Length: 132
Image (cartoon, rainbow, N blue to C red; front, side, top):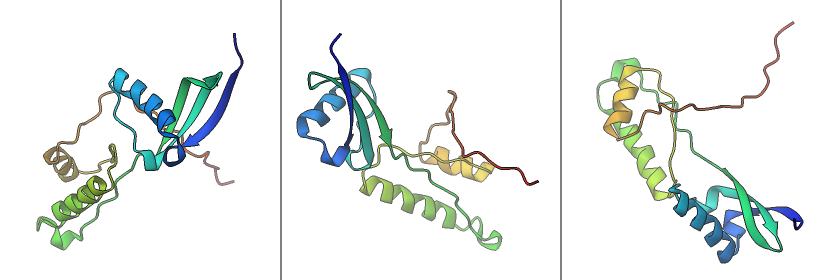
């Protein structure tokens, strides 16, 4: 087998052929298109041909959302949610996530056509040190 080399390419600095090669695989697999401004790709190459890749991408987390108790139910939460959604649309994010803590937050998400995940989600958190 020929020697495999590895190198990082920031999406916004990738050549068009590099970016197209990654996007073609994503499209063929039915994966969402990547946001070039928030993506870094580790390429595996043989003789300068891309044979594999792993993508690091910024995937926005939205939250927390807070409204003072005396002003809840006045539409402030909905306006805040819609304002953030508009921003995310304007900057062309490929998706985002949030963690909800209340039934009202669940309704906000559902009203904005967000999908509740049923598949496993894995998280790597920093090690927490216990107090002695």
